[in-house]
Length: 326
Image 1 (cartoon, rainbow, N blue to C red):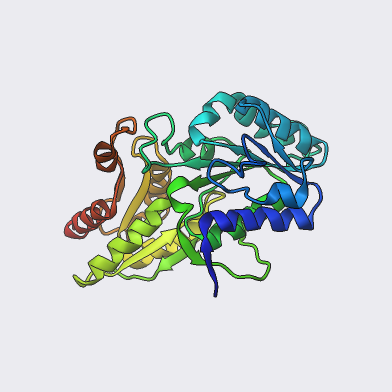
Image 2: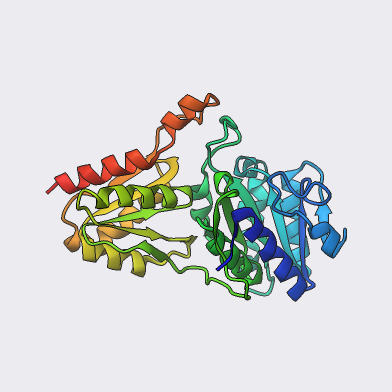
């Protein structure tokens, strides 16, 4: 199978959906001639024209508001927010309008829109451009939240998100854009709400999101040399959540480690831990462990940033501690 970059998979997904459905269009800052701040819209202006690839002013509230208005009129907008940090500027539109309109109108108002954004650290972007805020949006009823970890997942999930009749908050980690991986050439989608076991194992379950999936797979490979067999599960969609796949893994291994790049306090992992404690408690042989970022704004200095963000060695240490606990 061919291998392409994560960002190329994103471009392909949007191009295919725009060709398939003329109601799909894009809007965001610098997405036309410039091809997007992370080159995730390269070539789409030339293919589809200015009516369907629209540069916007630097106004996140305006971008989301325009996307909602377009969706209410029957279009399928894909709006880009340059950084997830900037979603704070548009929280009224996202939380009080986008997430609630369909419900408040008894399902008569369709809000088929996608908000694409970039999250995570690793590029010395500093505290206002490197956060992992996915838990904010999982907390809001009415939103679906997706966090792909591979090029194949990114393309298949984005195509499903664009076709979905509910609003989808689609979070892409900025360090994954240059990751290569196998992606089918034929048309395919990956359903929202379906997790994937990225690696089979028997001794403990690692549930990892976004960039932490790759780090967890590296950790599992190293632990395998010590005779420790880790199962790595990627939820892919944080809501709706495929808890059945995750709980089946926990019941098999008896131990659960949850890792994400966001800070631990009130992070998505807390919800996952609560679900496991409630629905698989009798199968747990040790307390649940979480491996997350340290409780501080993301530093600018590269050495400090790498100290704050969890890495492969942190996952290994967490797994060892979990295995030593009876």
